[in-house]
Length: 268
Image (cartoon, rainbow, N blue to C red; front, side, top):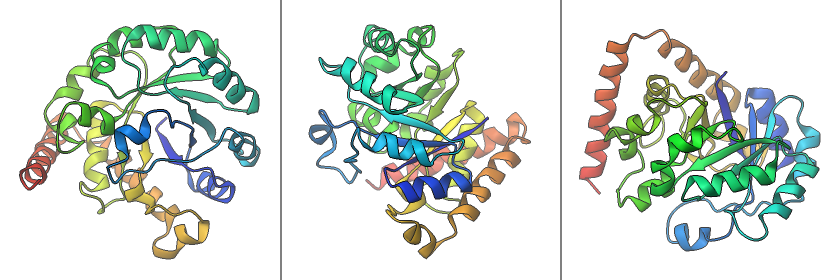
């Protein structure tokens, strides 16, 4: 199964995008340290609340509710307990720097929800194979934004184009998702080109980014400029078509992806 993630705390949007095929609603409670890392950038810093969990959970019929909490700190156990009690199906741990942090966080979850560590630091990436071996970990997600910033790269997709992510993912046993994606024909790198990399790399999940939904905060906004249902179906059909491609075809698309990234970076 391939999972499409949508970040929102708006009940009507969660209900609507689930009907369109979104399989995971993503509540983002991470705030500790985020302003310092990303406050100067054109990125979205969510202001979701723990109290949003219950309402979102109640409107979902089959999509899973994933909650990203704060990085490990003295209040993590309480956050984890509260999130699970309110209905979180999946807990995501951000900004860890070693396998020990993940193991500690997983012990706090203690099987109360699925556990997905978000690999978005250099040290976390270096420990990814050790993290993959932890019994408490169900899946992994690679966060391209913070990771490319720490690496001093100019564009987040350089992590894929320079071969780093191939090395990170080689030999992993747990399912893993990668970053976010735009609509077909849209975005700095079009959605279908990024999806080809997901297929080539064996990814099982992606976040529908702001470039996909244009930052819509109501269903009417989602419907105003494009048909969300049609666009998600179009992207998934591209994924299914790409799954029929052989390794030579995927490598050719990858080479075009690399050239596109290099062209973008050269202009920064």
